[in-house]
Each structure stands twice: as C-alpha cells, then as structure tokens.
Image 1 (cartoon, rainbow, N blue to C red):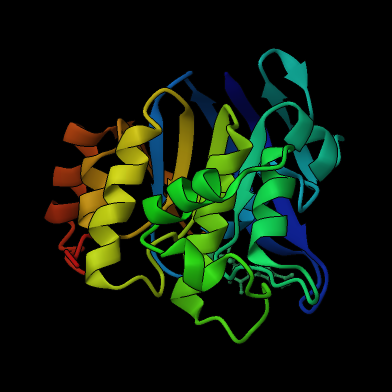
Image 2: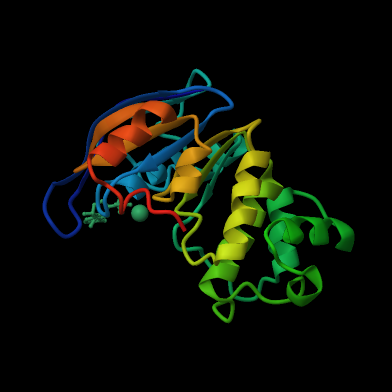
Length: 236
Ligand SMILES: Nc1ncnc2c1ncn2[C@@H]1O[C@H](COP(=O)(O)OP(=O)(O)O)[C@@H](O)[C@H]1O
Ligand SMILES: [Mg+2]
C-alpha cells in the first residue's frame, strides 16, 4: 500500500546539505502496523513527515496505493486517507475541542458521539468539549486530543509520532487499546516503547538516517535486545 523508493532528505537550513535521511527503501503492506524506532536524531520524525508531505524529499519517491504522491500536498494526501499525529501537537487559538473533532470527522457529532470519542482517549467530554484547543491544556491532554482527531478522520494510513510522549501510565494502556482497535488500518507509529513494539507486525530501526534493520517484530525485538538497547525498549 505504501512504497518508499530511494528517499533522501538533506536539510540546508542550518547546516548546508546536512544528510538527515539517505536512500530509504521500504514496502509497507495494507492493514499492518509498523513501528519506527531508533536513537534520537536518527530521522524518525523526518521520515514520518515526508510520508505525510509536511516535508518534501530531496530525492526519491513515495507511492501510495499505486499512485505517485511525492509532489502531493498535505491536504491531497489527507484526502487519500493519510493522517498524521504530531510528536508535539499543534494548538489552534479560538477553536474549541468539539469544533476540531467535528472538522476531523467531516461531520457534526452530537454530545454522545463526542463523549464516545473522548472517552476512548481517557477524557471526560463534559470537562473538555467546550474548552479551547490552546496551551492551557497539558502536553498529555493535547496528545490525547490529537489521537482522538486521528480516530475521527477514519483514515486508511495513520501516522503517529511518539504518541506515548507525555501520556501517564493509566492512559498508556488506553493508548495500547486504541492501537489494537486500529488493526484494520495501516499504522506507522514512531515509538521506543516495548508495549508498542509488541503490538506491531513489523519494526523499522533507523540509525544515522539509514535503515539499520527492517523485519518482523519477532526478528527485530531480539536484535534490539542483543544490541543492548534496553533504553530503546524500556517498558513504561
Ligand atoms: N530543519 C532541520 N534543519 C537541520 N537539521 C534538522 C532539521 N530537522 C531535523 N534536523 C536534524 O535531523 C536529524 C533527524 O531529526 P528527526 O527526524 O527529528 O529525528 P528523530 O525523530 O529520530 O529524533 C536530527 O539530527 C535533527 O537535529
Ligand atoms: Mg522525533
């Protein structure tokens, strides 16, 4: 469903032609969950942003359901059924939580529907429905609302960048249940968490902008453990 061919990204913002991702090749199958893991700065978020179209590659192409989407905008990719939850969620001044969930759903939800959506991410609707989506919300609350938005979009390819960041222990188990409920979609989850690695089908290990290892979970988890990467697969 997703083919990534010879994908490279060089940044020239601060450091001229800094190589951030180099010649990434991957084929992702429909309805499978892929976890991208690897040390800080290895290029995980960059790869996720290139797939969503938030960044444009220096070289290479991205094929989604046999369509070359390399030059497509974020909106065009969203219309094809790709969604993205940021590592650091975005806030929108003046927009209430219920509005953003309605926008994500593309329809007006009633109180009961919003309540169902928010309860999936461990939030009580009556406390949040009319709150503005601004920085009075904690990092963990914003993260949960962003995950709720992803659920509303009902996309066929969901990309989550470190969804566990800022999420407390109780919500973390909720989060695991959410990913299990998304098994009929294709999911790409950037994560270091053992419980999230455990629910994947395949794991992509990035190192210095290259694929260090790609394979089935049962093959890659022992590889990570053997490398003494306990910090990569720490449990929460
Ligand atoms: N716009 C940019 N300009 C310069 N360097 C960048 C830019 N974006 C990311 N980087 C660098 O690229 C590397 C990969 O970043 P990132 O994809 O965010 O890593 P990860 O998500 O694996 O921690 C890091 O060294 C980061 O500092
Ligand atoms: Mg990152």
